[in-house]
Length: 152
Image 1 (cartoon, helix red, strand yellow):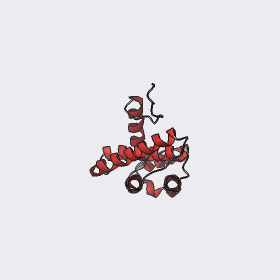
Image 2 (image 1 turned 60 degrees about the vertical axis):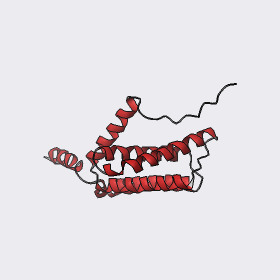
Image 3 (image 1 turned 30 degrees about the vertical axis):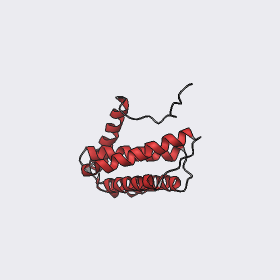
Image 4 (image 1 turned 90 degrees about the horizontal axis):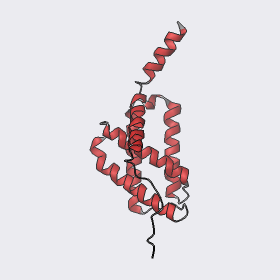
């Protein structure tokens, strides 16, 4: 009987909003906001950028699934800003510096991401993660590499 109840709880937990899982929700919020704050202060490292890329990819995936689809233009602008500053950072020895315009775009996408998480279920997040992985596997994701310099 105990196994049946724990299995049922496991299945039902997938349909609960992420915000109802306080440890998980708070942990994700803290990691994302810390990465964004490190970037704002000019102290971001590769792990911080990777954290933001992951959050922004999930934001795009959730929007594609209908959770915030009316924000797709702003999400694209935020992703472009993150991509541009990441490329510059890689080219300059992992110093990630952003412009004020990029800051506004990044902050907006992070706010949207947190709002999406507050209303998404665990199942929604799992589907979004699978969506992101499928985009990467199909080679449709932009890789951040040092820009090629022209040879003389």
